[in-house]
Image (cartoon, rainbow, N blue to C red; front, side, top):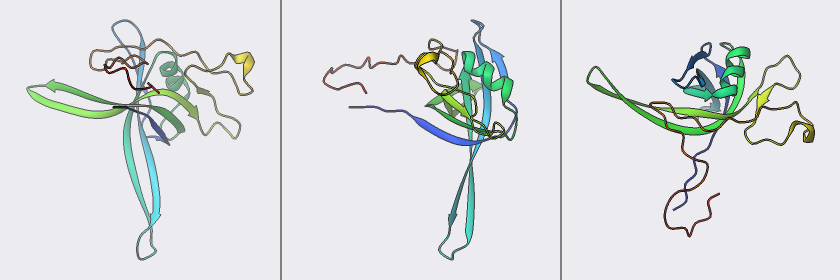
Length: 160
């Protein structure tokens, strides 16, 4: 059975990014994203719905997001959905979060926004501003990063 976990979102930060460091000193940044959806109802009235999503980035991307982004700024992120569970004071908690793998700033004063693209071509081979090299997958206590290849059995599926 094939599996695919990819999320692409564009929205505005709901709060300033919160930078922290994992025990191995890898930077991690958490931020909230608000994504709006507009449509017309059956009566023709304009309607709007907002979805709030928690996001996390690691390594150099975390540092860049922390340095340049603030509440209200626009960003496009792509990554994967992660389901975290934990226990606090005897209560079980859980939530979904987007683990950011690539991003693009959307409101950089009219020009092309800066960004980050995992596994990108070398800077001299690109027309766009240089992106940063992706760090190795990082594991934190509540969120192991799976490898980028299929470890499942079977072997009769193409892993892409």
